[in-house]
Image 1 (cartoon, one colour):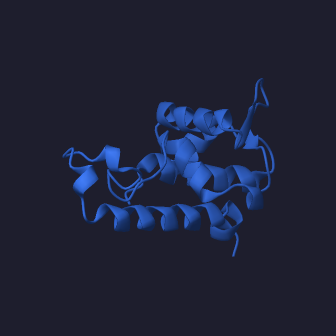
Image 2 (cartoon, rainbow, N blue to C red):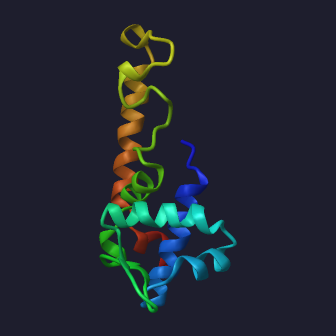
Image 3 (cartoon, rainbow, N blue to C red):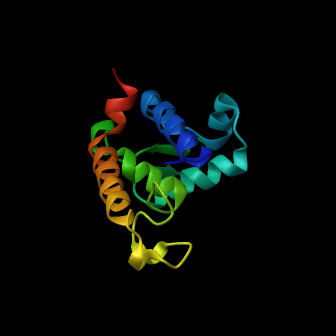
Length: 134
């Protein structure tokens, strides 16, 4: 499974936001992480849209966690950052996703689908607390 920089930046941002305790603005986060401000803003807005973050306007505004670390699953962070569920292979979520249009006769698809479900369950069982706080 390939996770893009969006997932990486989302996890890094959530770690800093959660450790801060106060809302963090995009400007300071982008400088701290050396990430494009516009790209980071898009990621954080997606996390807010999915209820992972809450945004505050104004001089002391920024983004804060909407829930505690232990209530935010890694799977939901990845889905929010990527805009879709992660997949091991293009076809693993459903045979109809087969890029060669031969999904119905694919002998390895059942295995790939089982693997996908195990990975999804694993990521859903991990929370930010599991990966960020030893």
